[in-house]
Length: 263
Image: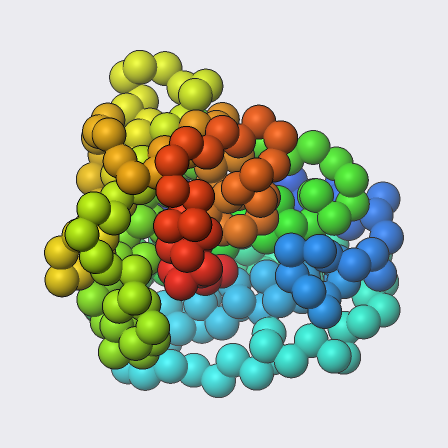
């Protein structure tokens, strides 16, 4: 369950996209994006805007199945983007999605790639998709990335929920190799207020992956600032990077991050 209201998520889609605009205006769109190998910044932003437009059309048409998505998967036509055109196009992409989501409301039925089947999925997923790709572009251009605490908390919750879906075992059978006795992972944000309860336990000891917000002893613990934890689970920051403390079974952490990777 999301920590953020539907209206807040709609607002964040445009707000997070607007934070990219100064980077587009002053940045090198041909700069490589290390966290998205093979893409430059212009291609990354075309992917993001294309995904926003795809989700907007999915919600607007109340699609009963997946719409074509090649336009934001094949990025070869966008290797040399013009910032003067890309910035406005990106802003329009976010606005189209936010407007479609507001018009639909969170409970409108629509096809989703995971169980749920409502517009609420796209509001939350595309908010955090935008946050993470903003991090990709920001870090690629050498700028400092930050995100509001409540948005980062919800992004981590969503990542946990999606990563624990049982359907993954059918699509990616190797994920079953994560399961085993004593396999638990504890993530602890070190820079939040006590009331934020910014600790997560991933439990791999049963027949499926489960998670909970809790402070518990685990086979491996990771302590880091909240934003760094978010970038860590999305594999945008290394587990052994500066400011990230890993205690215990580091190999289990690496295996989990590898097998549950997405985004």
